[in-house]
Image 1 (spheres, rainbow, N blue to C red):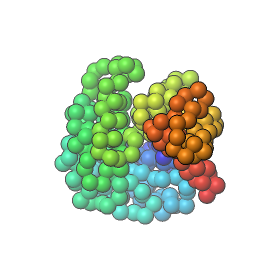
Image 2: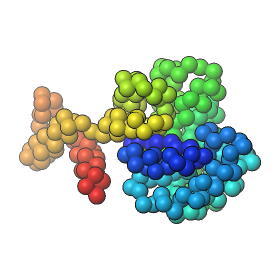
Image 3: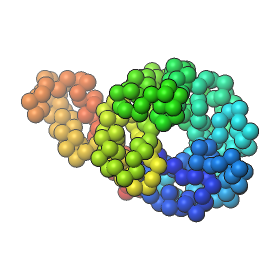
Image 4: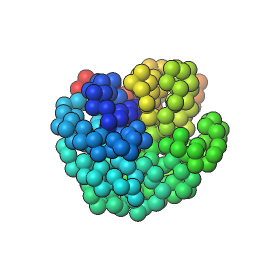
Length: 273
């Protein structure tokens, strides 16, 4: 999954539009997008609508309020509903909160790493039972450190999250949002940099961001064509030395090419399905 689109749990009139936006996953948000006074009604809106979620092709994740908040337990109870495919846990800083979620549901957990403590403990969090992928909460991380949101300022945090995911043996993490909704250039640049660093997807805060994010985290036609040339040349050489486009093909190059071809096949099958 490449694109993850937020929709406020307090805005049920937006659920269908979000689910139809083409995102690989929709995150129904009970946390930051919902005022304290509206938490209970947002939860009720989700409970009323959840039976319709499974009719859509997108994966549906539920961002609950964090452990230690007054809403945590009741939010978590919604994870039992059919139509909720996983739980997004904010402020994931230590294993204790993950243990509480895992005790309440067998559905996948998606911790958001959005503080200095969370980045410091990212590997420990990534290794917890039930964790599917890490998410980088870049805006809250920026607030916690009182730093700016530039790529250079957040590079170390991003790198630690990518490395922790790899060491823990879970899927590539999901990068944070691009807050400039109307800046297509910035979105494309942010997405490209995140992909080059090893992220496998990106959060979206508006439906119009989905298409660009999907494109950035999918192999391009040129990449697919080159990967197929590498695989075919290697197979013809029957394990012997081979050069493709002026570059020697060794085992790591071959394995990466096979990964690109496999990703392209999965995307094609998902579209056809």
